[in-house]
Length: 503
Image 1 (cartoon, rainbow, N blue to C red):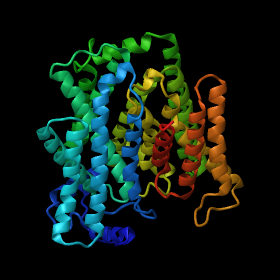
Image 2 (cartoon, one colour):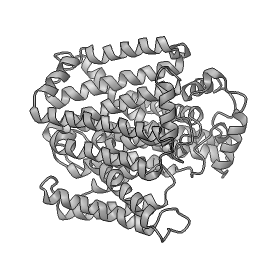
Image 3 (tube, rainbow, N blue to C red):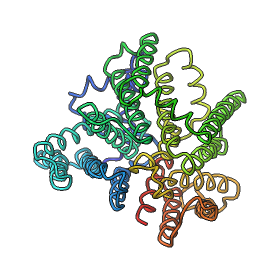
Image 4 (cartoon, helix red, strand yellow):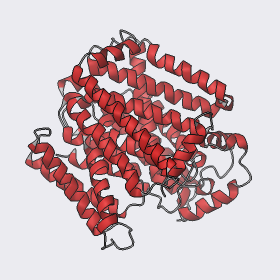
């Protein structure tokens, strides 16, 4: 088995001199690699450059399938019965992509004969197709087409991600990102396709918000793909023109009755408590902008404790949102993700007038895990905290608030406490790890304390089984945080969500 670090060094050497001005961004690099996929080394790890100073992290490809499988153990509420089939489809799809990742590692790392390579290449498509047919009860034709097309598309996107955004992801982190991307695309196509092919108008409040958010993010995804395929769209005036058209499509496409813009206005003005929380969210946004401006003005690079301020701010967003206005929080997570993507596009493509300021902000707050061009850490913080809400069918039904808080408890509470206590009081290190025993203890104690406070406040209902699962999840997440070199903002919420979901 070859060393990934060695391969990444070769990749960096090979890429010198081949990058042009039009390919300086991650999107340009993806486009460049797309034109050269006929090279014989397309499946070789030498053609990729994973994030340096980190292990491959191949085990991460199993996290999403495990989390989705655990969700299947819970009986759907009456309002979510129609989503049960879709949950099975997404779980099987995630498992197929995980198998594709494992087979890719075998294909790339292990020296085998051509027959074994052919079998390894076909295995994910065959296994996924059979799973669709047997577990989801689809037609055989549908199972074969979707199984092979999905696994093949996942493999290509996975390769392009590692080659296009060099040094940004480990192999495992790229797997989680691409799995999430493909699962969202499948879900959006199923949802929007069903609606435009004779589906009924959404009647409930959450259904209305959900289809608005799905439509908006899917349109944004199509826009990003267009930027990769058509470099001419990256010129500033064309970029802004298509951004305006995207905004019009999101707000005026007839996916709800009334149109999405009017439906959103009615939703926000319908409740005084909702308006109060919305104003509170806006104040937090202003506070975040002031924090970034202050740090940039100080001309000093942000240290770990300064970056943890954003963890505290996100706690203040998610906990009151989940408990009091879940639908508003759900909508806000989609808006925040879309805003992050647009700002990152402006920075990567160097679109004036904000590109320079965004580049300065990125260089000020980047840490050792932001080794590539992509601003990985802020994306992972938002995605890690939001993923439990996105993965849970009907998250606002109030059935399992503890599972929805997985991201906040693991990242916002536990990781923040471990960082602060470990940097201040940490004396006893975990072997070769830079993390300390004191920080790990703070991780566990802070989570258990937070859950206890939520319980005695009557905000979270806890049973003996849930307490056992919470303790077990806190211990496991703390140990992973202490020893992993992967992005913990992405890893810890999935681990915590999976374990507490067993209760």
